[in-house]
Image (cartoon, rainbow, N blue to C red; front, side, top):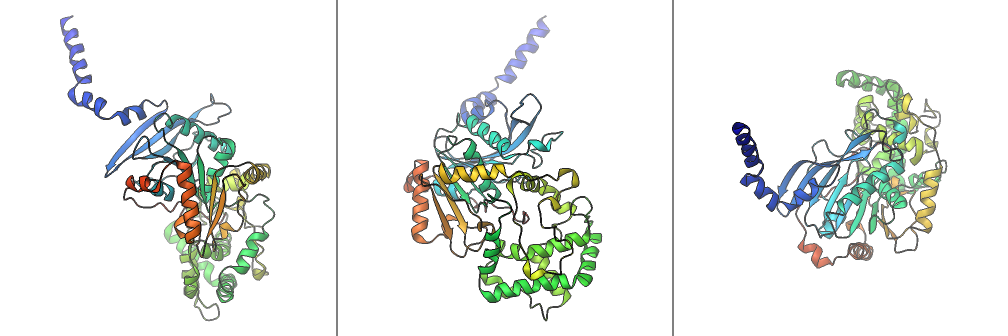
Length: 459
């Protein structure tokens, strides 16, 4: 009996050791995070003026039926102050395999905290087994609503949501279903495919972007690449054999991959490049096979439309095929050169078992709500960004849309002209309940997240 009592006392001494007691009294933030039901602190990094946490949050696989399984959704938390504004950042994709501290433009402007959310079904934030019918805009909005609700018990300041490209779309959808979760939304370069079959805006964009000489050079080299299919395709097949790339799991064949990559070149050029890069476009009439092949690789990437390149993006293509929609271009200058006229769709990048029929209702609903009922929504687009061709139209309820001159898919508030920059920044500060001087006081030196995937595919 005495031995047992000694053992119990020893265990209590371990529990109440000075280190443990000090942690409990000196780290109230960690205590509050660990007290949130379903939230797990995976790791922490301390920096100058901030703390950075990798977290997971237990979510229902299907919010309509929470008893039918769950999954752990990855988050990161950039902490500055429990009373500072908190920015909810939705990338629309996955987080880095090893997340590192970065901040979005709104976070940097506000000197705020930042909660970054990995979109459901991007690994490892995927239920197992996965029922892909649970990958909808409403289910992800439900995920984010639960996260905001849980963390508002820790962060008492105003909340702002942001995201770029698909992340911007995701932020819009969250606000559609939960308009009271945050105090405002800053959506960057967010496409709005309200009517999936109506894509004239994209054809108009490619007929007017940049100058005429650059447009002609891009169209010519794109057509020339397809004309040289017999000599360029074997290069792709050789690279695939050397690199271990395969095609039969999704895109189908090397020839289909070749055509899809070439079709993507002009889109990818304007998405990531600028008018200054027009000088790098090969002259179709004089370029060698190697020059054309290498240019396509630099701009669009031959490795992308392979099983290995596409698998990570399956959740995106699934959503594009089923709810988000996708741009379909006419490619008038490529008549007679395409082998697969119906190839340029979201389903082409999915394995057969994940291909879906498009449902037009969700995007029409969101578009109508944004136009008429939404409040405190700020949209930033790039003048030379193809994804910005079909835009959301904000309501008149304390909302606005700005276009960054000459900007591509990386458009930011910082790239707006002076008057628009001032108006957008003032709007953000007002929604967040801070002044410029207070935000500057809380600022820390961290890399700025560009908020768009390096190569998400044209969709």
